[in-house]
Image (cartoon, rainbow, N blue to C red):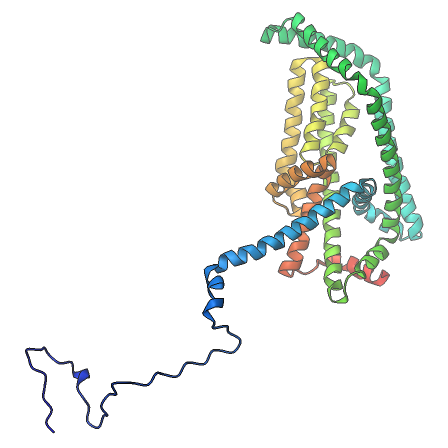
Length: 411
């Protein structure tokens, strides 16, 4: 049989369309290919697929993260509520924990020669004697200088009035009007004096009770701190006890470093500001130094408030010029703290970025006021160190490893 080529009028033929020798003619009605078997466990029903196909993977992942974060936030809020509800107990425990981190080396040094219980008791008694002695010194200085302060304050007020009158054009009549308005405001709230007095009495009662709870807890933290921590670790599952144990030792190291660095920074602040106040003749200079020392334990806020006290004393007792000089001295000391002491001492101790410190303090003030500002920096430092230890797998430092071994032997 002779094959005919397509005519040129129709067009050039594609060689792929030409029949091959030995090839069978194509069937005009081919059989349908058998359906491919679905992979096991895969739903091939089209009615069940569109819902999954229409939600992008990013949205699904975001939704799963969202409800998990909501649960975590609810747990954190619940913990904060319990903390605030039991503040009469939780606050003294936190104070005792910070004090124990500071005083633990003293107890360990004394325990080399005397029993551990006696060493802890002497540490607590010595701390109380130091605090009471500082407060008594401030009180005696205030009492002895009260007469001089009163006369200086009267002269200073007259100088301030004259300065305001000459500088801003404020007359004595306007000042008297402002004083009268302040008196009227105070007298208008006199109906709530009973309630205010009752609240003040309740607050004093809570402070006294919290003080004794803190001292009692401090004694046992110093005496049996390792045994208490070992008991806490045994509350966790066996598989996670090692990580919990090492995380606790790292947190303890951060607390100890923070308290020691804060003591050094507070001492330098008190010495610098107290020296400037004494050179200028500011009344109550020694009490100002003690106030600055205790105020430095609250980062940023405490330094600002305690630094304003000598400036106000200089203003009302010595006049605006020496008040400005005192302000310059306070700013110089605080700049020394911010740019030298904080980076070299506190920064190396806790290794937290200054922005994290400021944000932590702001959040602490919003959540718990002054107490929140006090514990914000050590809390951020502890969370940072423990987070790196758990997520990055960092090893426990050698000095902290020895404390971990002591705790394991005690447990």
